[in-house]
Length: 212
Image (cartoon, rainbow, N blue to C red; front, side):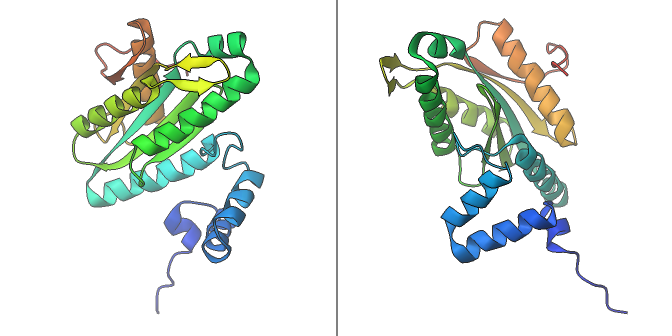
């Protein structure tokens, strides 16, 4: 008998409802797609970055693709340094505008094929599929650091931001999304403990456990 093709939801790694929304976006345009994604809480309204739920779907899809292609991918865990001071000094409205600009700068500094997600507060995750080596991830991390050091001109804020970035690479540092996120988180905290404003690749010899 003829084998039936797998449903698109299985192939893409999203549930069937999300696949329907993506198809609707292709047919009816980006604005309708974004509205639907916002309504399903797959995108943050403030930053237009993916939510944690959407990130998990994309990460599962990209890991499966990397396994199939014998490729690498990198997971970045980013935490803005001393961002609470922005809210405390300049107000939450200014802080929200800075977060919007941060998300935009991260997307601009990365490739179109990369994914930016916001976990909440001042924490972001970036997913970089199809890298040739861990060095590619390190170069991308340097670009992100540089992009946020340029001044933010919001309200009376006129300075750049620093960020602590932890990096985990598939398959070197883990073979599933949860483990990669945990190790990137641990590497990020290692950067915090060393004085912030930098990046570090996960290393079992120097990284302690993550918050989880």
